[in-house]
Amino acid sequence: MPTRALSFNRTAFCWVIAFLALLVSDAKPSALQHGNLAGELKAHGFDGDVWHVSPSGKAGASGSVEDPLASIQEGLDRLGPGDTLLLRGGLYRNSNDEAIAIATCEGTAENWIRIANYPGETPVLRFNSQRALILQGVAYVVVEGLEIDGQSDLIDPEEATAYALAFDNTGERDAKFFGVGIRVEGGPGQDYPHHVIIRNNRIYRTSGGGIALARSDYVLIEGNEVFETSYYSPWGESAISVWESSNYDNRQDLYRTVIRGNKCYRNDNRVKFWITKTFSDGNGIILDALRTNQDILKDGYAEAYTGRVLVQGNVCFENGGRGVNLYESNAIDLIGNTLLRNSQRSNSEYEIECGRVKGIIIRGNVVVARSDRASIGGYQFEEIEVVGNVLSPRSGKGFDLVSGNLVVAADSAGAVSPDTSR
Image (cartoon, rainbow, N blue to C red; front, side, top):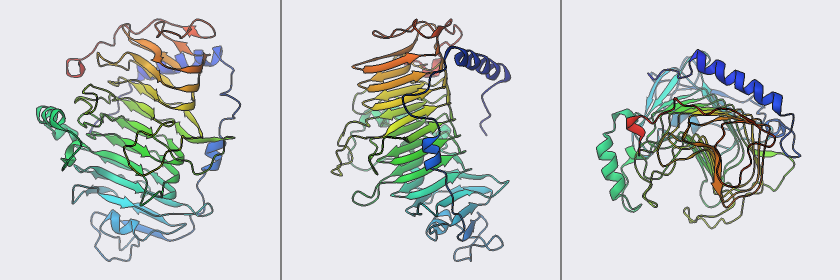
């Protein structure tokens, strides 16, 4: 079982630096107030049925605590507004190449649906398929308290490299190279997911991304621990990714996407992205193509995302890619994050990368890069405010780190390890 990675000394260092960040910044993110989106997404109304699933359950059971169902899928298929599905401790595995389970349930604004661990127990979803859990076209759904193991430690790196070099995104895929822990995606037509909370899960060793969202709106990703993911997918994935979000509505008086309080570490790409033929991602967090349509899904949706995004209080360290990567996206606030020794790969340069973005606020963060890396950089950006941060001194062209920030020494101990040098 992977062990927790934050030592006492590192944790203490983070707290000291974070305190310094508070001293140099009393600014608020844009005109918005913290907590608006969390208020919108406060799940409630769990007064429906409570279903139970257990590895020792049986098909067709009543679903009571004494008579649990045998599969997560059977439990999901019974959920309606206000219902709860509790997973008993133990091991759950996939039986095909698609997923352990696919949720298509929809709650309501008054009656959410909850999918969670049974109190005091740890359900482990162990898989070698393309997904562990898919949330497809769901609405008003909470997923929390799960442990997801993608078993990528069992993959032969040489086999993965050869597969990625030959991959052209056509024909049958070998599922074990594309494993995502929790995937949130659209259903048939333009039935896109909205009002989704993913919190307090532990996701690791997935060959693809840890938590991956596509075409979503009104989402809260909070308190998850995601590590050692994204090594072997030719799609170039990351620990937490939000890609091409959809518009449930066009409100701009609150945050509609929030990524808060997560720990993402030692994620990397160890095979090349099939389009660019480079090691492209393996980021802690990426906001990807929120303002553009890359036309990969072929679903006819072409609207730019109109919501504002909050990335707050996350800890990202020792990832092969950036701590936070902002790509072709607008209107994002990075507030109070701690980014340490990311960009471990030799072709990754920044802790925070801003590529083709506009309207970005970077405040109150602790960003300590390796001595041969830069804290912030990018290309084709405009309207970026960087103030009230604790930053190591190097930056990309066009960024002024001296004015309004506390500049500290870079980390001289963050050398590239042999297995992540590219």
